[in-house]
Structure formats: C-alpha cells, structure tokens
Length: 611
Image (cartoon, rainbow, N blue to C red; front, side, top):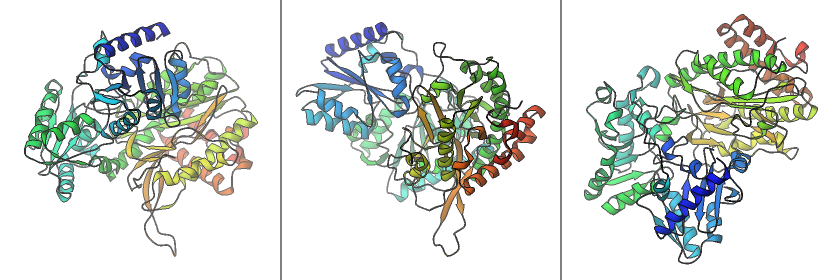
C-alpha cells in the first residue's frame, strides 16, 4: 500500500474510535484461533498498516501509533509501513506494554477485541493500563471491521478425514487419552480453539488458511471422551460424520457460547490454555459460573510427540522433498550464471518440482527466495518491486517446505553463485559449526530447547556475532510448519524435549545490505544409549533433511576433525539415500556436491552446481 492509503485507513479508524468513546485500539495479527496463518478476513494488521509479516501488533491512539514486530521482521516492517504514521518497534526490546505505559493518560480507554487476544496477553495489557491509570475495554464488535468496507468473508473450505495410515492412531484412541488425562486432573472438560489440536484429535484436515491443512473450528472435549465440535455445517464433506463417529457431536460455531454457558450453569470444571485461547472464552466461562482451570492445551504435547507411523512418514516425506530440492539446486546455479533466473522465477520452479512429488498437497509456507542483500531480510518475500536476478558473486538463500500427507518439511540452504568471499566462507562455516553442534548434541531427559540454544550460537559468539531469531521451532505431521509447545530459543521455555518431537535446526547470520546465511534441517528427538558409566535417560537428534550443504562456502581450517567427519558422513548419507530417487543429471550433481572436503576438485569456488 502507498502511504496515502494507510493514512486514510488510520484516519477512518480514529474517527470510529472517537465515535465509540475509545482513546485507542489494539490491532494484532491474529484471528479467533491465534494461529500463525490467518485467513484474508483476519488480515486486519496488513489492511491497516501494510505490514504482511506473520507476527506483530499495532496500537492506535488519537495522537500516536506504533507497530511492534520481532527480530525476523525489523527490516520488512520499515520497508512496508510508513514511518511517519507508525513508529516501528522491536517487540522484545520495546514491548507494547512499555509503550502504553508511556503514552496512556489517566482516564484513557484502550479498546481491544476479546476474540483476538489471549488470556495471558490481556493480563499484561491490563497491568500496563493500570499503571497509567487507564482502562482496558473489551469491544463487543471490532471497530476496525466497522471501517473495513470490503472485508472478505470467513473461509468455507471442506473438512476431510485424515487416514490412520498417516496419522498412526485412531481418533477414538486419542480422545480416550485426553479424556483420561482430564479425569486424572479432576477436570470435566477442555475448550480447544487451536485448529491444529482439533485436526490432530479428530484425524481431520482442512484448508481454511494457506500453507497449513487446518479446518477452522472450536471444540470441547469432555472427560467421558465425547467431543462437541463447533464448525460451519457447509464445510462437512460426505462421510465425515461417519468418520467422526457417534461420540463427536457437531454444531454451528455460534453454539459455542451457549455450550460454555451450560458448563458454567452446571458448575463444571473447565480447562483452557491462557497462552493460546482467546480471552473471550475465559470471560464467558467465568460469567456463566464455571470453575476455570488455566492449563496448557491438552493436545499440544501428545501432538508434538510423533508416533512411529508419523516418524516413518516424516522420513519418507523428507526423502521425496530432498529429491525435488536436489533437482532444483542441480540446475539453479548453472542457470543463474547465465542471468536466466530471478528470485520469483526460481521460487516458482522449486514449487513446481515439489508439486510433482507423491502425496504433495501444498507448500508449507511461502518460499523464501533471496539473492544477495535480500538474504539479510530473515523472512524476505520477493515481489515484482524487489525481485532481482541471481548472478555471480551472490549468496542465494532458499528457505522452503512442503505439506505431504505423510509429513511436513522445512529446509533452508545457502549456496554461492560463483566464488564466495573469504568473509562469506568464514561466517558460513561458523553457522555450519553451530548447526553441527546442535545436530550432534547429547543431553539428559528433561532438557529444554532453551538450554541447548547456545550450542548453535557459540561459534558466532566467539567473534562477536549473533542472529535475531530462534534456533529451532517444532514442526507438525501434515500440520503446522511451526508447532509448539517445544522450541529451541533464547526465550525461556519450560517444555522439555521428548522422543518423537520434530524441531528445526537453523542457525544463521545476516549482514544488512550484503547477504544472509541460514542452514536449516529438521531433526527428530530420539533416545540414545546411556554412556558407559553414565546415569539416567539420554536423548539426541536424528537429522531428517537430506540436502547437500554447499562445501564451496566451507573454510575447512575452521572445522574440527569431528565437525569435518560429521559433514562427510552426512553427505555420504544424502548421496546414498537420494541418488536412487533422481534423474541421471541430478545424480551427477549430487555426486559432485557431496564429495569430501578434501576432494572438492572442480567445485573449488564454484558453488554446488555441476559443470
């Protein structure tokens, strides 16, 4: 959007707030389900500000406005949002609550949509308003929606069964597990608002948002293992009711409120997740008289711990995914040298190659195809205005993934087009060392990802460098490419890593205006033998991604013997598992791309492309 459009929309919102007697309003990038990807109807932050990132919040007051994003989007937000209208802030270095404490005045009324903020989030906002002598006001209707003239309708994609041959467990078995956990904790029911939890629990999938096979719905699971599913009846496909079974009752989404009222009237004990559930749910339950238990989503942890069928599916999906990516890399650098590829055409080519793979359904996120300085923008997305040709002297960063019926993939590789500089080789090698340190970590049961995060950063820290994003996120099984409750990050996380969890391993380095480097593979947490003389249970990681790492960017003198051995063994495994899946030309490239460091030959200074 141009600045004039943003200014007009901001003015219209301020006029509506004045009409409603509000001093300001919060505009998060969120919908009623608090998911990462939201449908067009919920793209309120983008409509108001022009910012299209996947995380952020704007605050609009009568005389000031600001937009807050995390470290992935600090460059993007400044490029997309007019700075004269919205102050840009780093959400952890300058939190919204601090900004509000400075800006609000006694008697001010700050509005919010209770469907778009979690219970925990509203508590923090109430504390900030209280310190300023202001009032946080829930709005029955969203003021921004009142001025959004052509707001898109809610999504109506079909809800379909997800076969047990991919899920590995029946929905009835999952319902029993969750119900038993509720009963053991003295809880009568749990409210589920996360679509991925509902999809996992009932073995269903949908397509209400792009890139993630989610059906938008709400659910209440009871201690007798029955479920009330609140979903638009127009989304129910033939055979779905039979798939759900008699223990699952369906109703329209509008029936959720009355259902919560009945639980309250019966003085039931009801569980909901304050970190992921809209505060509307807590307010409705409390008003109805329910005893509300604030506890994590009961499906989150069992969903994160993949069963053997899901792990086998993930391995198979990653092999097919690697075949597509290797076909892409085998030709992209050769084409780039001739100036025949741009960021957009390269991404489209990769997406097309993935689409040829069996069981593929859609990308797991928009492909990040970033050449040269665009690679320094962590979540860069090429547009016709920013699209640049791939050419000699550049680093090319491609971060992409696929949704397959048997698994979800996410992989980043950075490759040199032509001869890389000494600085690029040194920094790439430090990122690689961090990647290897995490891939080879051995840790006791009970360890969290936050405790492991520094392993991946240490080689950069040694020379005063770092990256401003997490090192790893959880990944679903034909579900979200970003999945909790585990993560590998500086941000403290109390959830211990457990066998079956899938995480990313993605350290990076970004030099603004010059280049970006990221090496990302997915890993599965797996049990390890207890060392001789050791005690207790030990865990490690199995690397699932099977795509070569560009050795033309590696400075061998910086690697230890153990690190070099890991890279050699990894490439030998890639070559053995992927060569049978690709065409002869790609196989020849793969042979060259996976040669040991001491046998680089024609690849010296030439990237991973053959020829």
